[in-house]
Image 1 (cartoon, rainbow, N blue to C red):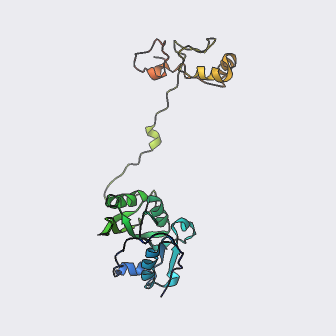
Image 2 (cartoon, rainbow, N blue to C red):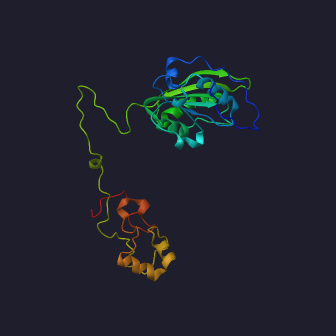
Image 3 (tube, rainbow, N blue to C red):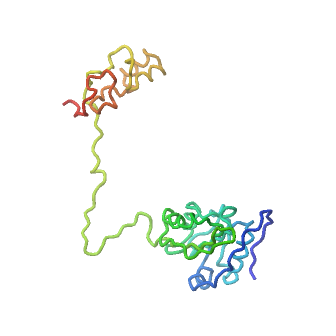
Length: 266
C-alpha cells in the first residue's frame, strides 16, 4: 500500500472525519488510472489528511501522482488532469483560499479539475467557497456535499474546473455581427489651460495666503525666490491657471469661485 512520509506533530487530534466515499469514474481518472495525472496537496503534519490521501493513493499509479505541500506549489509539475486537496481542519492546516486555488489551476491542463476535502469549515464559510472559485478563475465551482462534525463545524467536498479557454479569449456568436470598438477612440484629450486665469500667480512675488495651486508647498521646499525661478523656467508647474476646471482648482480669492466649470479661453 502506498504511504506518504509522515512528520511528527504536536497538534491535538481533529474531530473525526467521514470515511472516504467510493471514488467515481472521474475520480479514478484523476488518481492516475489510465492517462490521468494528479496532484495531491496536503500539509505534512496533517495526519488525518494523510490517511485519507493514502486511501486514494491505493487506487493510483504512483508515477502519475505528485504529492506537494501548499507552500511548495512552485515545485509541482504542470499539465495535470486534477488537483486533490486534503485538509482535516482548515483553521490548522490547509485553507482553500483564492491564492491556493489559483496556483492549483495553474498546474492543470485546460478542462482539468480541483477536488477538495475540507474539514473544520464554518457554516458561514461554505457558501464563500463558490465565490473563491469564481474569483480564482475556475468554472462550475460547487460544494458537492457537507457533513456536520461533532464540534458543529462541517466537513465539505468542493470541486471546480479549469476553463477550456485561455485568458483574453473571445468568441463570436453564430449569425451575430459584431463591430469592434477601439477603446482609445472613446477617450478625450485631457483639457489643458490655454491661458492664464485672472488669479494667475506666476508674476506674484510669492504664493497667496490661501494658496491651493501647489506653489506654497514649493516655497516651503525651496524658498520663495527659488520656487519663483523654477516656475518661470518651467522646471516646476503649479495648478494655477486651471480655474476653468471648477472650484476644486480655484483659490479662495479667485473671481471664478461659485461658477461652474467652463471651456478654457471661452
